[in-house]
Length: 387
Ligand SMILES: Cc1ncc(COP(=O)(O)O)c(C=O)c1O
Image 1 (tube, rainbow, N blue to C red):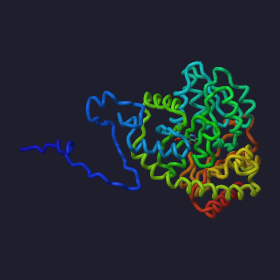
Image 2 (spheres, helix red, strand yellow; image 1 turned 30 degrees about the vertical axis):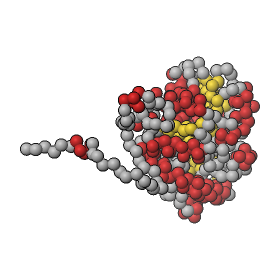
Image 3 (tube, rainbow, N blue to C red; image 1 turned 90 degrees about the horizontal axis):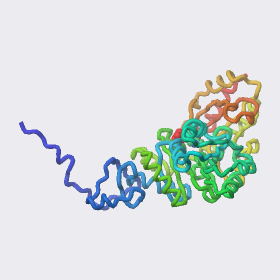
Image 4 (cartoon, protein in one colour; image 1 turned 60 degrees about the horizontal axis):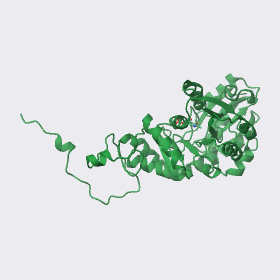
């Protein structure tokens, strides 16, 4: 019996003709990348984007996405990580060593706080929290051990928009590197590098993906030395991303501007409507005067992410607030933002900002792409459950 020899299915002489061109990027999947000769393999440069070495360290698909994200952020270099949180951890690991300290805003994205409290501490890296609304206080907190200041604008639950200009100035005056979690701004609301920020991280999971179905992060810089430090740590940690996921982000990126604007417009209308309701004590949306840091937002931005919180009046128990969220039919109960479906999450503020908590119960809304009328009707029927 003759067996079929599968060798031609691996080494087939077919070469696609030159000249194929299409608007959408190709998906290049590889662990092994082939070198034309042993000499070329020996001369490989793991850090350079001018050639390929191993799928983990870059393919045409991931290099293209990195280039596009650098363009979006106004940076020059970018590395991808498997999630936004992995991108935060990459920055921490690349820049901090035992004996160093990192300063985090006290409204920082929760898992970044947990990373500092758990992993960074185990590696001998200290952390302290600063009030993002008090740049003068940050200046006094910086010591020779401070090697990194994280920034976040706006805070993703309590929505304060910090005094970025003076926070960056305080860090710069003492030679400390600054890194911004720019997931809220998405490269659209303001230009972080123009403010002198050194590193811009983004959870691509949110607006760049836009589908609620991909996890990825990016770290962008304008500084070749910083980028090389990040890229080396990135390689040592093996932070690869899947080509199909990278292609999904490439596919969504061209529509990020219109999606961001649509989320923003709907969110502002709903926030204004909620602000006029008797059940709502306060609206926390950077474009509203009732939000701490509104003046800072106004001086830097004209747009905002479709994300805001409300403080429901203190007369409602947590059980009533939970029942309100449960009663929503169009808003899913779940984390994240930037996708087509609106989401609502009640948060325990005291666990996040301690003494600075406002009166009442906080519910955060991530506004999707549904119509204002439909979302407003849903909120209205659920608010009736509070009575
Ligand atoms: C402000 C902010 N930064 C970072 C992240 C982390 O992104 P990922 O879920 O991709 O790890 C999130 C996710 O919710 C976020 O809200």
